[in-house]
Length: 270
Image (tube, rainbow, N blue to C red; front, top):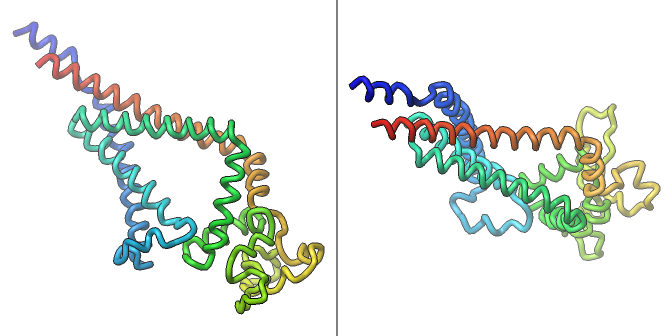
């Protein structure tokens, strides 16, 4: 009996690892649920949930997808890690480790490919922005995202203001009846510090003017170039964020694997 008692005492689950992993994952679980809730609420407000076929109708990128996908991944990972740690369930803990490892591998692969195929990535970014320029008025969330990007990076269009010719409301064709013809969105306009209220009509007819005159009223640099410049200026911060995320993922995998080993060692002594 004493020998059996010695084996049981020699192998036990670490409470620190167990409850730290539980606390670590319950945060992600709740955040994931919040992200999913916001995404589903946004789709409900736009009538997408009552007509699921409209998901594919938008020509551009629906920002709600970010909340749905990121929230879904965080919810599933958080659930597996949280319940797996609390119940000492090796299946859920292994699922958590493999899923997190797969995400880490995909991030690493994407980073390497982005570095190797920089020109291709730049072309794809240009194509992505132009597609969303076309769909600017089709979705309010996409519109807000484009306005934020153009204001934040002080840019207009993918390569310049003339990219807005791709949008049916802003193009300069004679058949365009829109009041915004030959204009740009207000987010392209240079900000006047003296103005308290945003002038949403500041971009009207601005592309009828010459290049030098445009510079007085709107940003003339493209968002692709401005994003590249921002990335170079903030490379250390961006790299630090990615490294921090990677270390968190590796830490989570190690904790889960450590807990799996503890559970197996305890079961081996039963």
